[in-house]
Image (cartoon, rainbow, N blue to C red; front, top):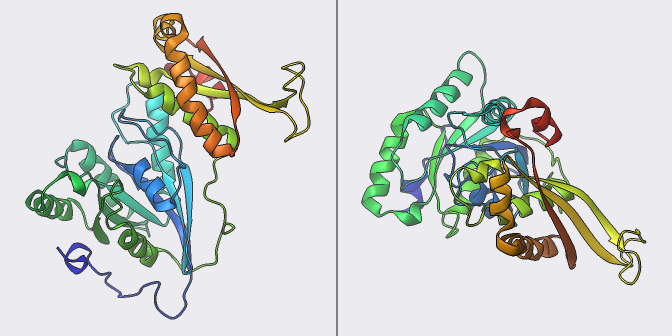
Length: 329
């Protein structure tokens, strides 16, 4: 299948390649849980700015990744998966997605090629159609993800079904894992952006703070190998990142770059039984989490860190407005 067959051209025929026009704007990636939004965000940015997991509803914030090209700057907003909420946290995540959609220039609606279009996809499509009624809503590009998992015939049928879901501005099939059609997608999205100057410096890849990125890496490590409802019950707060004297008092701060960097963080769960699962027999599981997270944090900060993890119970925090506020939701 050629690029011409896979990627429909825009109606107006404009593109970033014409006449030195620079485009810039915000692009929200939306879809049901676990459709590949975070993996795609990282593939487009070229660096890990969003954690990924096989567990659904991993993303809990609108995480911004920044792609700077000669002709454009694309600010990606990786949103939480839209789902039927069972907790106050779930309701707030859905509200966050709706707020985000009202503030962006383009929506990338992710629809995995290995899953049939379902009620959740139709729910999102209805929301998008409503947003575009009576006023200028965002442009909408259908992004058919995970094409490496299906054959050509299945993909062709899926593309036709996607085309009937709503009136998309473009439809682009991609594989973020294999890097297929990523450049094509960036060109397509660029064509949909408004003309405008660059919004962020060339070297900035994300709006996430250092502590936010560290807390997400710890949560990603904690999600590995857990089962049932536990992934949704885990929250992480970075208490402090401090430079300490390696030969003296482990709690006495020293000048940046002159000591040992210590990251102190707390993992919150909802029940005592969950605390036991996270810690593991003799602390074995928490050590695994710490080791996995530490290697990622080392790469992020460009130096070795000492990671001090604690586990605490915040009973039913997903349903408690006060505790949600304290945990940053």
